[in-house]
Amino acid sequence: MKHSRLMTGALLTTALLFLSSCGTQLPPSKFQQDTPSSMPVHKTAMVAETVAYEAPDPHRAEQDMLMVNSQPYFDENHPLYVGKESTDFLQAFLFAEEEVISPVSVNDLEQVIRLLFHFSEEEESCIRMYITDFSQDDTIERQHAMAGFMKLLSLKYPLDLGGDYENLKKSEAIYDMAVIDDKYQSLVRQAYCLSFTDYTVQRDLRFRPNDLLTHSEALSMISRVLDHFGPPAVESMMMASAAHTDTGSEQSPEDNPKAFGSRSLYQEIIDYRATLGKSKTKASRQKAEFLTLALDILGLSNDDLEDPWLDDPLPLDVWVKVLNLCFNRVSEDISPYIPQDAGSFLTYDIAAMSIFIPTDSGAFSARNVSSEEMEAARNAIPQFETARDTDRLAQMHASGLLDGIITMPGFTPQRPVHRIEAMLLVKRMVESMK
Image (cartoon, rainbow, N blue to C red; front, side):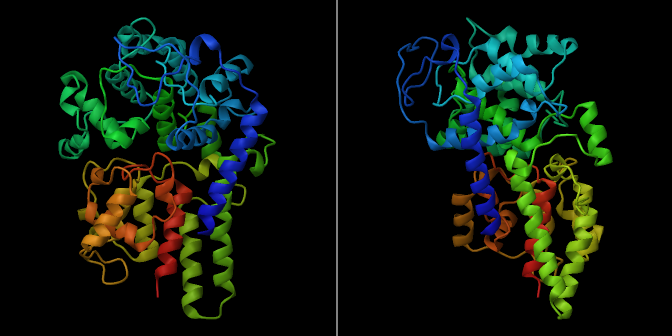
């Protein structure tokens, strides 16, 4: 599809240009000891020899996404800028040319967490409590790292560490869940349901709690969090987003791959509305009105929008308003199908449950999916079983609303829907209307 090609082409092209311009060199004392990819890293069996090989596709894809989401940290005009010295360190850590599967240095991991998630000196005790105290010889077990990381994230994002029991049970897909220490099981289960566990867990369905966390696994965890939630808000960013004012950056869309992808989607939607506006049929004019109304509700009707605003997670109440005003869904029709633990932001499985409901008599009425549709969705959607309602998610997949979106690294049913992605869903819903 057009939007998918634009996003993929822009992302890969800019990623390659960014890598070539960075000229990053990895400190040999930290990242240049690799082990074969098929060999798990244990405390009792660490291999020091360097093995050159081509990184697997999952690592490359997640590194490309991380490259996109980390751009603000390297922009001198952005509130998230980390400074010249820290920029060099971050580039060396994040953009290794090969998958680095030696144990990650805990000192380096802590520094990356400080920089990317804006932990101040006053919050240093939290990093020591949740990460440092579990390190041995500058390495850390995977279960300790994941549990500590989740606790640190809860300080920066609206993340409820309690979790819903019925939802967390879906993490039983991990074969070695019982091996994880009881103290960390709930945190690891929740991380899996949110897709914050690294790509090896999704690939192998094993967590390997007692293995040492590797450099590439740490990157994957960080990449997925940034893709889900974006960078944590700092005061200057919150003020800028609220006012929708210019940040002062001189970057063009071509310089910022995420902005280019978002802008391409935005432009596609605007172009579609313009095409509808030229039509003389009543149906086309009505569709154009729906798009205009949705753009206004989602806060996307201003041509001077900041690109980070496009990629903000969409509040659930705003989505309900879109369904109400654009698709004649009254709150009483939607509320029974939104779980009480849904949280404050729209996720893709909640979107499916709110779009396809039994009380709808039109194109978006909930129906029984066929076994073929269910199997196709299960094969196509990562961690499909973590959806709150697999039937509705399978119907959403069969409808084509998720085309292209589910191929993005880190996509899961419980991934937050960004504003521009919500508008894409609206566009596709409008297109399917008669």
